[in-house]
Image 1 (cartoon, rainbow, N blue to C red):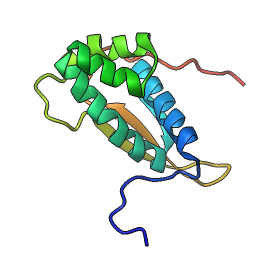
Image 2: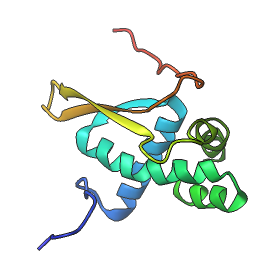
Image 3: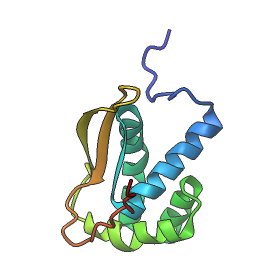
Image 4: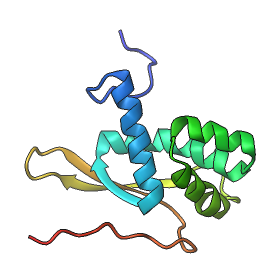
Amino acid sequence: MRHRKSGRKLGRKAGHRKSLMSNLASQLIKYKRIKTTDAKAKELRMFIEPLVTFAKKGDLHARRQVLRKIPHKEIVGILFKDIGPTYSDRDGGYTRIIKLGFRDNDRAPVSIIEFVDLAGVSLKEEPETTT
């Protein structure tokens, strides 16, 4: 029985799941807003919120703790330099999930996950493809 077990497996093995969360978190920190499935967005929220709390502390130990989860120094630098100080007065709830509906090809529920209160931080636009 699976009672009282938190988290989703997302149809992946443990290593693949950790890599997926690290990559999604890196993209969220870089672009401030990403589009993904509902299940991945909910898992990403649980993954990224403690990292932002570490970024608010700003010390060396916190930076090393975040580097264990996201091994990209430039992404961690953005997290500690831009995002952490923005949320210095907020106690959790750094992200928002907006449900978009269903994807056309496989009808998977899709959402946008973004950081809240980004008045001081500019949103980088993802490159658009023209078809």
